[in-house]
Amino acid sequence: MVNKIKTVFVCNECGAVQPKWAGRCSECGAWNTMVEEKVLKKPRSTMHTEKRDLEPLELKDAHRQVRATTGIEEFDRVLGGGFVNGSVVLLAGEPGIGKSTIMLQILNKLDGEKFLYFSGEESEEQIRLRANRLSISDPRILVACENNLENILFQIDQHKPSAVVIDSVQTLYSDAYDNVPGSITQVRECAGKLLRQAKELGIIVIFIGHITKEGMIAGPKVLEHVVDTVLYLEGAKNNFYRMLRSMKNRFGSTNEVGIFEMKSEGLIPVGNPSELFLSERREHVAGSAVTVSMEGTRPFLIEVQALVTHTSYGTPQRTANGIDYRRLSMLIAVLEKRVGLPLGTQDVFVNLVGGLRIDEPAIDLSVIAAMASSFKEIPIKTSSAMIGEIGLVGEVRSVPFIEQRVKEAAKLGYSSIYVPKSNVKMLKNVSQTEVISIDSISHLFSKIF
View 1 (cartoon, rainbow, N blue to C red):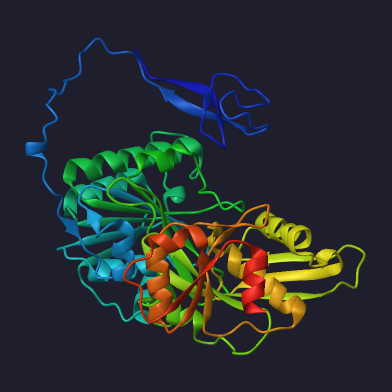
View 2 (spheres, rainbow, N blue to C red):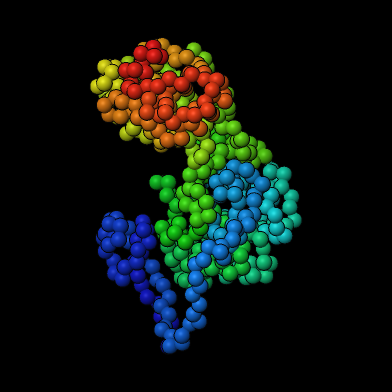
């Protein structure tokens, strides 16, 4: 029997395969996302494949996996202590955010005899120019402008490297398929073959991935499923700070976050984000409040700024930078209903300093305090920090990790810390600071204004 080519239709959103075209995907329900692709249909074989023996799952045979540390503390923190041999990592982010830069820095610091860097977007000379800018001159790093899968697998088999970087996975293609590079079939099959080789040889494979304009990783969703770790490098290109998040990690926590600062010598880890984000804060200015956010297991202080001014238009503006717009709208409604602040005729602008984006509700208390401070033109005491979630009836609700948050604020000299009343009983060994319990928005305003 000979191999045959068959035509299938693949959903661009979820990667589901259907034998015939349909306007709507049967798996995810998305409209007009089906793309025609040709795949190789292999004949059935009567030969039995070799079967692997089953092994008992016993704790006595379990051992701690030795990790390859990158030497970059913030990156190791997000990975859970470093790379695991045989693992596959996907690093995604906006164009120009610093993905290729940080990969060269990591290869330069990793322990190993040889590393391979394959780029389907840049020539060898362009990679050398970036390395010179970063002051990296490492003979262990071998670079090639290559995006053919068969050639890459051959080079990996020949050199037996410690780590391989593919920049980017969406540029790969295999001669076994007629689809163009970046198509769902090419991305899925190329990633799968590299995954199998990584597991067999015990090497680290790092994919650099593109993202779409919606912020999702380009290609089939199955790409995120097959890899061991998915990392996002976030941050505005006109801002110096970058945030590395773990969205999936089979060998560690998905709650950790690394903070970097982009400089001429590359991405530099930020050891103490709290001091960095508060370094330019002005004192005795209305519309500014400090809160403590938890990113993973690390607390750090953030300045929340608000500007409330009378609108010049029929419909007031609501602008949120760093927080969810719908959350801001809810907090404005709570202020109007429960406290009586007439914000219906006011433009409201809220910004988290440093270009950060925080989704946790524990910063609610500082957001409403900053808005009220700007509206009343009354500055908040500079030694105050506020932690708490706001409910729809104006109550201040408890938040997790309260002790770590309070200790971090006290360490940086904040002597008055406003916390939910239900959290006070959880605080232990907190000294040299005044912890003030708050049960409602009205109670908070009676204390600070």
